[in-house]
Image (cartoon, rainbow, N blue to C red; front, side, top):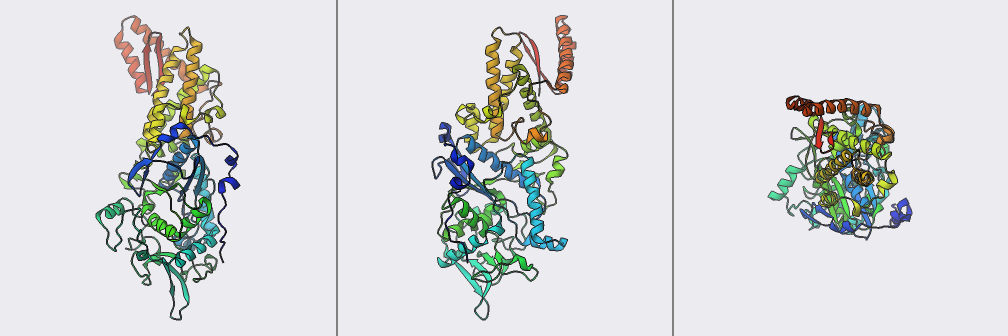
Amino acid sequence: MGNSQEPQDFNTSVMPSSLTPVHVAKVADGLNLYDTASHQVSHFVPLKPGEVGIYVCGATVQSSPHIGHIRAAVAFDIVRRWFLKLGYKVTFVRNVTDIDDKILDKAATAGQRWWARAYYYEREFTEAYNTLGVLPPTVEPRATGHMSDMIDLIQRILDNGHGYVVTDADGKPTGNVYFDVASWPHYGELTHQKQTAEVDEAAAVADRMGPSVDATGDDKYNPVDPADASPDKHDPRDFALWKAPKDTDPEDARWSTPFGVGRPGWHIECSAMSHRYLGDGFDIHGGGLDLRFPHHENEMAQTRAAGYPSAARWMHSAWVTAKGEKMSKSLGTGLSVPSVLAESSAWVVRYALGSVQYRSMLEWSDQALVEAQAAYDRVSNFIERAGVALGGQPSREEVTGISADDLPTDFVAAMNDDVNVSGATAAIFTAIRSGNTLLSQLADRADSEAVQAEVRETLLAVRAMLDTLGLDPLAEPWVSAGAAGGASDGTTETPEHAALEALITEQLNARAEARKARDFAKADQIRDALAEAGITIEDGLQGSTWSLK
């Protein structure tokens, strides 16, 4: 029935980078990451030297993506990019759940074929990922393409005595198959739930922090899948591995198996696909905070019960909140990606979504976008001014070729500290301030060539750090789409910048004349007016220079 062939080494058989020698940076030895299961930040050591396998739960493609979905994608894109910058060869798997109750029900209500609806919204998610600079996964498997893998995995669980098939009055399989939680003494090790039908306070805290926002019914162990409310379960905690179809399910949403006709439960697809593409054990399993329980708890249990190692480390990104409440469609506060992009550039939206560490709640507001726009203005202003001063920009190959060992130490320290993006961003703006100071010295320094070399070194570092976060304005997708707002490569000064330079220079000259005449009130008035407009003035021995705040 199923395909029992063991997965091939996906890196060797598919990944182009498999032909490139792996040179892991020395600073990789300092990487520390949080593990949900241990509740601790600990030293990261890959299972295979020089390689990292990551599986991240992707979208259930029932409807359009909102920024809560995309925040998780951006968060793990930054994690992945840091591994790449450290020199690891990364296999990154992100699944697509293209069949489940919500997809079937919503398609039926809308008069659609379920697979057509799933594919339509899968493409919307892909477009959102691409627009916001999320790297494509190494492989993006669909649940419907891995039924044989799921059937094989369920059979292993049954053979190992950790599941049971529900039969009818005649002893024939109904299609309902459940995981037997009582048979698995390790159940609860991810979210620290006791092996009883009652939960302790730690589990209650976990539930409050990460329940499914799309919960239906009062079954806390399985809040999404209606099959898990069945009276055929031996224990309230048991969950569906496979389930009989509903009467309303289309004929093409049913698969024949040794345990009856039906379709997969909520959790089994991730266990099957992570093993298919990452083999026996892999480094990191990621997903949103609301997936910790029951989805990831159940996934861990069934994978291990089938005889396979689970992920070595579990990482979960926190929610996007709006006025302190989790953003989701069910709460009516979801913001679609197109509506957000209609108000702000894609670079600004990505910056806002990735502006805090992945484990921190992200409060979404107009102010967050205002701050992200200000960050873009500071970044693009420096990159453009430096490019003009140098007569051009470093090539993309030079930017991407910078090793983590050659990045500023404060940036590396922040990224190695459980991917502390806030600290990494602070390091970027520290470098930009230094670069602006150097630019102000260029015209009047006798050793201008030495200063110019320092400017180039700083510019290269700034762009390499930005690139690690997916934010180099002169990289794709920002360049082709113009999504960053038109950053210049510095080979020529943009008309906008030239006009701004002329206007501000006129004000600086007027301020200098006022100071020379000891009219300090007028000088201060000019400075304050420029500050109100978002212009920072720096006075030095060689005169005054300006930069955007």
